Image (cartoon, rainbow, N blue to C red; front, side, top):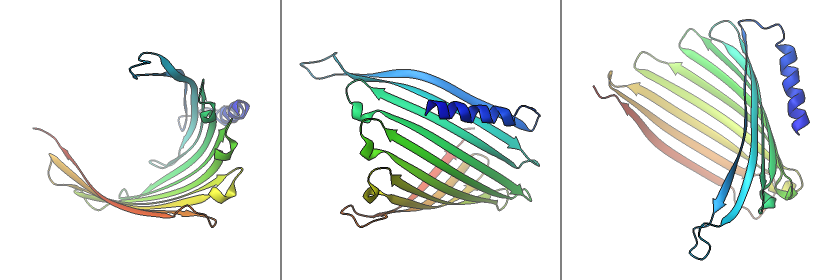
Length: 218
């Protein structure tokens, strides 16, 4: 999988060889580890387990007619445990985004992504997922803005198709500036999770309502 990441990065570099002000290449490389230490009275201070990880991502962003743009992003993560080796995994994400604004008041955002997650020593949990996300934002006036968001994601398990399922999320947010100091945002979301084959697992549906606020002290 590391080789695939390197190849994808080289392809990105190839397409950005003729660098211009309209193309931006960003990325990050990260390596670290975490240690689990027991707080049990009999084993206090002893190392229970630890894992090391590698993260990296690269993104190519192309500016179109202002303020429109699109980008492609690839992410890679690996995590290896010393004891709980069934948790060892490697993940690759491929993401594409296109954002379009028009008449200064409207914005369309389209986002597609692909994830491949492989559990090295627990193949039954390995899966791929596909996501399509559409977002519409409208600035009604200086005081009010609303946002509609739809996301659908499907999970396909590599070695056990009976676990396959999809999740659809519908979200509405309305933001209002009460005055120069106070901003309130109302949100409503419905999420539906459905298994793609007959199984003992239950389908799920949930909804939530939220109120966020920001108050600036004078």
